[in-house]
Image (cartoon, rainbow, N blue to C red):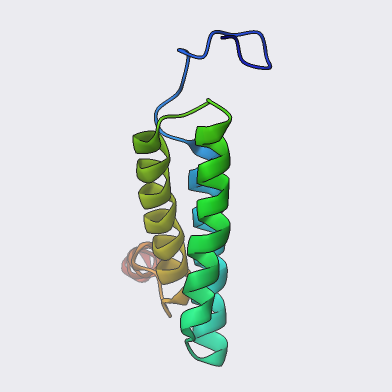
Length: 106
């Protein structure tokens, strides 16, 4: 059965970029709100529900296998948490190295 795009349903991509993007954005938002206003379990529940709905839609539309969206969710969440962690640091390692090098050049 062809998909809506006219392509065979056997053409799918690993991993789901839509799911990954949804989980990344939602994870950054939940982590930021938790950092500023204190953590709440409903924030992470919203990440799972909203991101999960994107994943389910991708599988039901026939664009991805369940494993594709699971890996997309894991990659997106890891990316979102890493971005939040990098932005929360007071002085990034790279800029510290650049400043140390600039002081040595004087």
